[in-house]
Length: 153
Image (cartoon, rainbow, N blue to C red):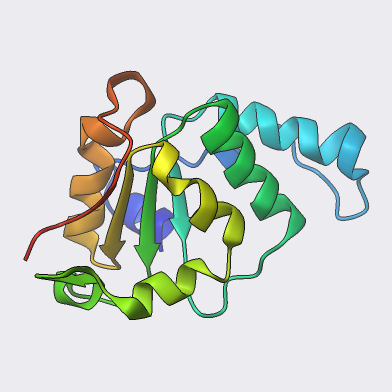
């Protein structure tokens, strides 16, 4: 989705760090090849984009990416929820909704560490994603305070 938007609109502010270095094979060794390359990609990133849904897999690579990105690099996280399209799906006047918080349980490493960096929770809406990607509070060199945020209604 983000790559498609970038392909259709060169001004769309998305750069895929996973396309910036060596390709790897499915049979590559985790410790000697995959993990070091993943970490190199993370070190070259200004933030992390996490697509979190009911079908997100709690994989070894995803856990490593989140743990290293947050705890070692201090990368801000923009969380996009593809099953939700409106700000009101994410939060209401009481804060982030229960249906969103329940998704965090699918990825405990994220749930348990997201308070350490600026984290923005947004629905899957192009203009909101574009705004988030351009927001200096969610970039490593200009990041804001470590807190969980969402766009107000």
